[in-house]
Structure formats: C-alpha cells, structure tokens
Image (cartoon, rainbow, N blue to C red; front, side, top):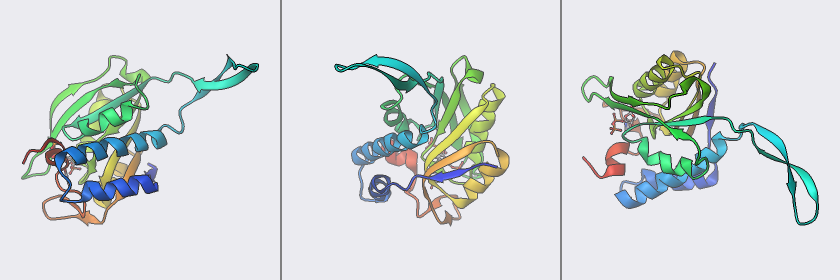
Length: 209
Ligand code: PRP
Ligand code: URA
C-alpha cells in the first residue's frame, strides 16, 4: 500500500502559510512555491543510492560517497506543476523533465489530457510526478496512468497541498505510488477546491483568472 509522507519541516510550514495567504501576489507566490519545491526535493531524494569513490583531500586520499547515477525524471502536470520544476532542478539539475498536460473540466471535475512528452528511456527512470494540488485525485491518477501506459515503473507523487479525498483516491488507484505532501488539508468544498487550500494554483502562479 502507498506510503504518505507529510514534509512538515518548519521552513516548509512557514512558507506554506504565505503561499496560502490571499494577499500574497503572483511574484511572491511564485518565489515561495519555488522555494518549497526545493525543500521538498531535498526530502524526497533521501533514498537516492550512493556509491563509494576515492577522493584526494589536501591531507590524504580517502573513500567518500557520490550519487550512483540513478536516472531521474521529473514530470510536472501542466500548468501548475511547472511552478515547482525550477526549485527541484536546483538540487537535481541532471534530471530529465517530461510534461503531462491535463486540465480539470470545471463541470465534471474529470481530467482532460491534452499533451504528453516524456524522456525516451521511460522504463529506466525513476519519476517524480509534480503538481501543487491533489484535490479529487483525478488529475494525479490520470497522469500516473499516462506514465505507466508509456512504460514508467517507479513513480513518486509530490504536491504542496492534498485533500484526504485525493490521497485516498490516488492510493486506491495506484497503491504502488508513494505520496509526498507539504500539508494535508481538511476536505474538498462543493466545487472540488481544497479547504482551506490556497485557491487555484495555476491562476495564482500565472496571474490568470
Ligand atoms: C489543478 C491542479 C491539479 C488539479 C487537481 O489543475 O494543478 O492538476 O487541479 O485537481 P484534482 O485532484 O481534482 O484533479 P487545473 O485543472 O486547475 O489546471 P491548471 O493547472 O492548468 O490550472
Ligand atoms: N485545483 C486547484 O488549483 N486548487 C484546488 O483547491 C483544487 C484543484
């Protein structure tokens, strides 16, 4: 069964408060999302494999660890996932970036896929699927379907804010996908928005309405 990790580091909680704030403007919102994405990337990469190498310090030769070179793929769910990419790439700059374009139909709340572009060697990569919001779970479930259909095997899902409904739905649909979140909120409202949430992540990131 899926594991759910809540990254409740004080810095993440602090920044998330300002991300939620309705008075935070587009520029600051973007910067804060970028910063939280970096902090989350630090936590989510804790299990990256290491290998031993030799290094010569000014004092003597010694054995030391470097990353074993696992192939990583970061996949933002468009649009709002884009806001987390640069923050993640600051820590893992060599990762390849795929894109999955999905929007939630405002009436049915069902995800509609409009774009997919992934690295060629999908089966050889460990993927981190990224979206600020996990609401009903429909978009994340569809994005994981899309990745798996194209051969992806190891997938983690990372988001800023999740509703319990979305976590449960994603766990049920994809019990092999671990979920990494900065905050688990209370519920969804009648329009499928997370309560208290942060509003519409894409609109707040890009200044649209
Ligand atoms: C938002 C958000 C997620 C989705 C979450 O995207 O970024 O992708 O809703 O909702 P769900 O869990 O109920 O599927 P939206 O559809 O607003 O598209 P956008 O990123 O293009 O604004
Ligand atoms: N998508 C968002 O951007 N916000 C929500 O609260 C739910 C879905």
